[in-house]
Length: 207
Image (cartoon, rainbow, N blue to C red; front, side):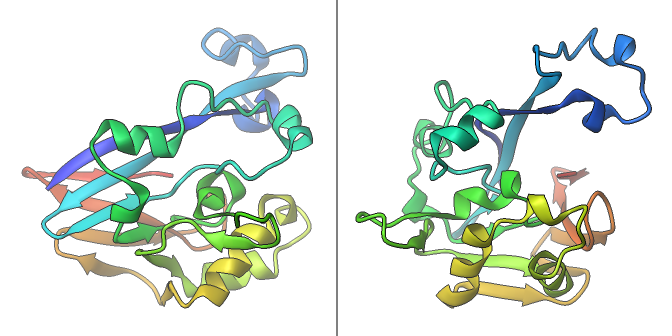
């Protein structure tokens, strides 16, 4: 087994929202805000090489969004994109066999879909992959509360549901040998976090 941290680019969110009760004079020392009080957020994924599987955990924002969206969120794909990061390791998106989505917020699953060539509809990016998500989280994403609704985008979710490539899980499991999924109610309902047994250590991908 090999593990690779994958950089898919950066975007910006409000620093106060990210740090909560921590006073700005403390967090801005390490995370300086721009004039709109936004801080840089890395969108890192995990790539797991495991025998005949190439497993991607989350996939960032993707690149289907318009200029208005990119401006609001300060999206930066100049240095890194998921495709370029895969290519640097000698892989292509078509090599991905499985995509584990920790949750369905737009900055974690947006790279799952893209426009088709005619910009008529959204299609699944990883045509050879099976996608894995918790059933209860999918229900939550399709019927979110008002506070969280802005984080779930239909164009990221519906094409997966309709594709036949989405497998729903019911609770914690050992999805593949040495790759366990822990279910937590973190900053969204029923997230799944991969716990990987790797070289005598346990590594948790805390999305």
